[in-house]
Amino acid sequence: MTEEKNSKFNELVKPFLVLVGICLVVSVLLGYTNRVTAPVIEANELAQAEATRKAVLEGATGFTEVKLDEAKLKELGIASAYKENSGLGYVITSSNKGYGGFVTVTVGIGPDGKVLKVSADVSTETSGIGSKAGDADYTSKYVGLTGSADSVDTISGATYSSTAVKKGVSAALAAFDTVKGA
Image 1 (cartoon, rainbow, N blue to C red):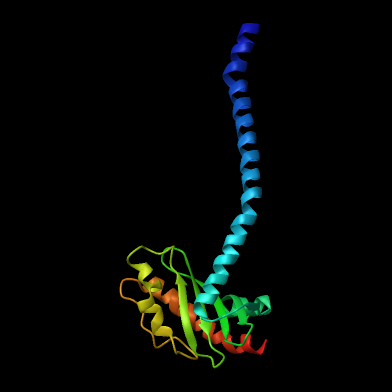
Image 2 (image 1 turned 180 degrees about the horizontal axis):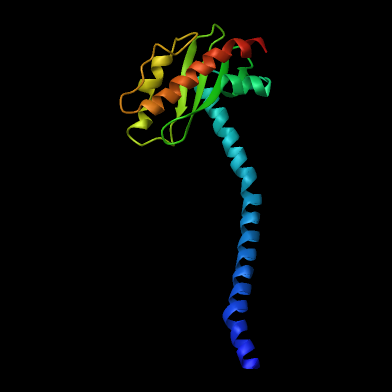
């Protein structure tokens, strides 16, 4: 009888306990890894965002975030808005659904409300097709626009991706007056 109990223990309980132990060790290690790497990842994301802001507003020295009501930001489709400290203009970022995921569009707008430069992160889009919406050939079509981006055509074959960029620029232009007044 004890041999039968040992056999059941070895077949059922022992593997279960080993798996639970492995899961606990792996969970602790993953938690530790996350704790160590989270600040580094956050710092890198902040540095990348700052570099993108400086890229779309050339000559910028620094930025101050424009605080808007969360409901207003959501209504306008805006992720963030920054004012350049020396008065060069504003940088407004939005995120819109593309074909493969979300496309983040960062727009540099001068104090007169004209688009100075557009940067589109199309890394989630299909390489060679949807990624064309992030190319300078396409984003430069928005430079000089005021009020709306309706006059820029989407890219044939990359309609979702280029529509996401177009929506992002339109949202930034629509938000400009609100941001400028804040």
